[in-house]
Length: 269
View 1: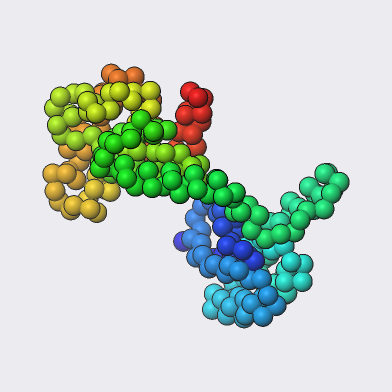
View 2: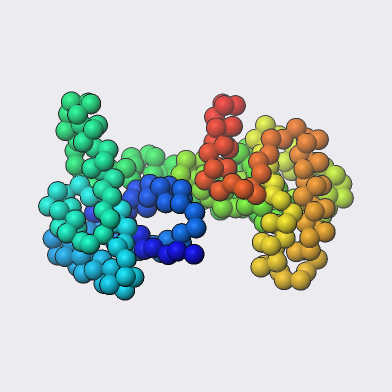
């Protein structure tokens, strides 16, 4: 497999550069990308140091690195462009056409995307605390305040999905694992029944579930393929019987599932 180094350079956190850059790179199969992050390059001195890093990477790899940057300062940007790399300036690609279309200059201020209002920031922190307090069925207190409650078999992706929903969208997301007792009764836990309108499910292919569980508890009944098949089938029957919408995690990322859940919640609002 080919390998290439991709360097994310920004005068801020670099989250925007990495998010957009990864979206572009995901279109190229058969290449393994080694990521290097250079955030907060907001002075001439830091830009010069970054040039040295990029040069060292170029010499080590024997190939030009891919350099994806979001840089608002034109002088610092010009310094970075001196590097022997394929430079993709994401802001330059989009800001100039937008200025022309809107007939106004942009603020050219770094970090605007992440500068949330105090209220929005507080809401996200509150949502994260809620997700952690209601992870894996730890507590059923204040479930009435949840925006959604995820159910599914153990290791189907409930926790990371809830945390992503809280961090990115400020949703109060709880999750509840389906356990052997639930499968024996063939119905959802009584605790969740009052919140049926907030329930959504996650499912996953038994083979993938087996691989995940095998890493956690090798050679256990918990990780056995036969048990995984039984639990997934039983969980899907329960969710079908209860009329719960559920999403398959097998071939989708957490980000994709989170957006689908967000759309489902807002549609019902």
